[in-house]
Length: 115
Length: 112
Image (cartoon, rainbow over all chains, first blue to last red; front, side):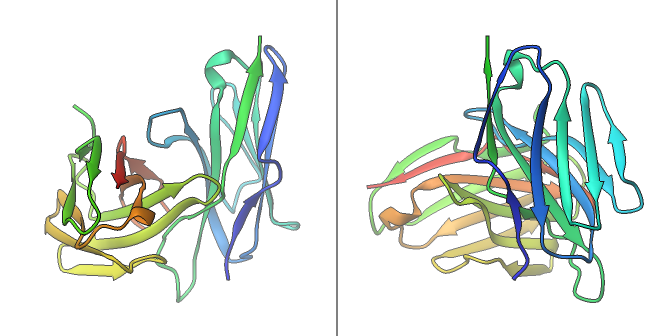
């Protein structure tokens, strides 16, 4: 079945360094991708999204890269701060006759920021 | 006020009891979803609704039922709660296909 997976369950970085969280997806028909951040005790919050007609999109301190050839998605966080400590989820949605637009979620990478 | 509101935030209930989790949204979205989150298993879809007259099962619907009372309201019921339904439950909404979801703050349910 269709799946979305993250490469590392936990990532530990030093404050001020850049963080890179990776994600792989299985459905080549996926054409919408999104990253969520979930802090302890809260619901997932939208960070950034990207559609398949793009390979890069930038937000405030975050960049999402999409490589459709290898079905890989990454989230880059610049100058990581303690407030970035959270669980990060990637998700994808596909198109086509069977599309319902439902997001398929990965299991999450826990980002730990060391002071 | 939050865009997606879930009540209650926390609930402890006994095995065999019926319980309802409620969700309301002010986003004006047609699509609403119920997920449960368990450690190591990520977010799993229970039920979803694309409009008031449309209800669909997700990947783990057994033991659950839903009601879409209005565009803004989507409730999840456990007819006879069991301990393995202990989890964090999230409601979400979306504007349509291939749009991001807006999540509520979650309901932490414990079945003893």
